[in-house]
Image (cartoon, rainbow, N blue to C red; front, side, top):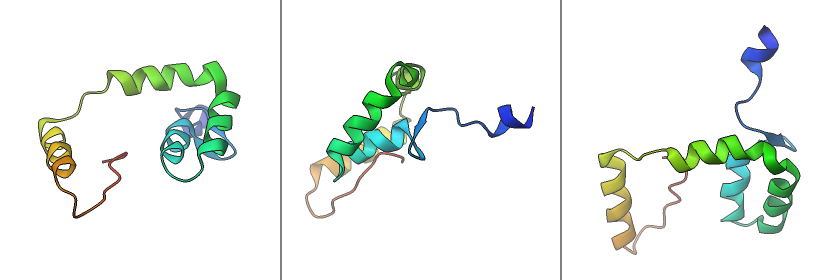
Length: 80
């Protein structure tokens, strides 16, 4: 029972979850991130489907829109 509770909800490769690898792909570890997603393979599909189905709140959507219009501050909004 304890194993099921502690098990990560997303597939993990080299200690990082699939969402962390996808964020790394947009940053500086592109080749390593692409290899990680290839290695995770079809195990990532349930997590990717959850991400695609997720809806942003009205407040977050407006915030992202405003940040996109300005050029002064560069923000990474992956886990906001």
